[in-house]
Image (cartoon, rainbow, N blue to C red; front, top):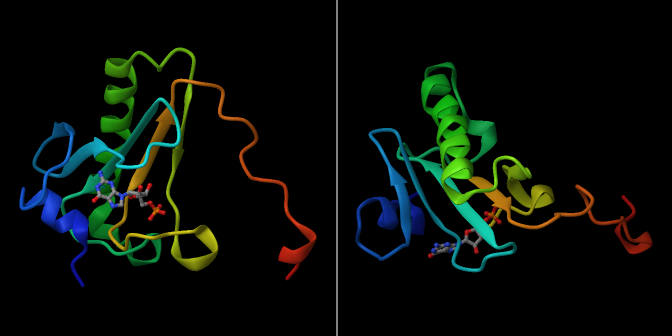
Length: 121
Ligand code: 5GP
């Protein structure tokens, strides 16, 4: 099923696009969690990381080369950054069009929030 990201790819709704090619699109997250927070998405509709297939390898590899280019362009490559792909409920995925978060511009802290006792299981 199509998501809001398909509408951004089709330019039916606005986004602050920072990069585009035949396989991938990158735009600033609407609710940034770091000074640089960019979403890099395949133009192909792949709902989650569970849905990737052998034929998607070139597309998914492109997400990394685009991330590296944008990190350089944004001036965060040397200090470093974090790339995140969330999958389904436990991963906290909200938009079911596979996407890579590029986060940087400050120290990002530990990779995961400390687990709460109430989250056991
Ligand atoms: P997820 O939780 O699925 O990994 O991340 C989805 C991300 O998409 C969130 O960080 C959210 O702020 C962002 N997002 C959701 N809707 C829009 C939108 O319409 N435009 C933009 N630019 N970002 C969006």
